[in-house]
Length: 115
Length: 121
Image 1 (cartoon, rainbow over the protein chains, first blue to last red):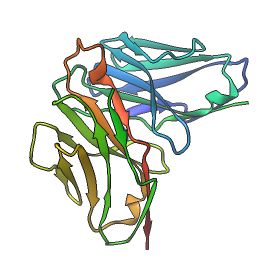
Image 2: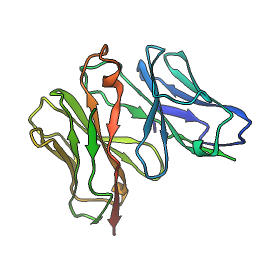
Image 3: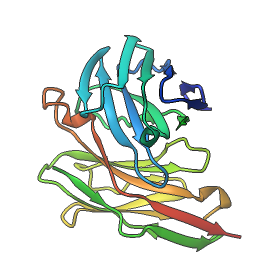
Image 4: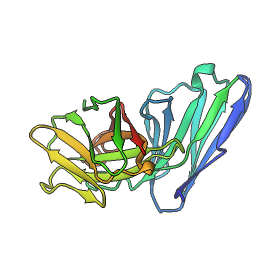
């Protein structure tokens, strides 16, 4: 069983729709991540939250809007997406900061398809 | 910037045999962490094994072990007694050990392009 829970597992939406992806963890991690992954490619980092504050935005288009309401939850709000945004979206969490070997723990992902 | 190279896009192994996946990386840092992640068709990225750069001893986790050669910047993964459940995409990843005020570099995982491992019965 994964310790990082993502919902929904699958999402099909039109280009004019607004939807949200959700991620939850109860490991006490204070760093949370969103990744985008295309088929047979490595994950690409999108956003990092550390102590509920946005720490890294990898120049992601504004049609993706992250939100971290509390230390356990991470959302990704989607609006006016393009067909090329179809991908697997992975959430991860970890202990924040350097000096530790703690890995990122990943969820199962949300498979997003844009019509 | 760091780079991670996995030179084998695909590998195959017979069940119960041993296979080695290669990974090399480039960095100017002396302190960092290396990871191998496994991603089966079920999609979840699962940590297989981790290695701290300051440790000379190679990490092992049951049937999985690494050959860490810091001077050569090499971090290969050996899977012994391969099982059908080992079939997956394997990603090698690098993370800086710099402190939190380093501009976030210690949060970032730099992944290789992956090696797709097939296990034949």
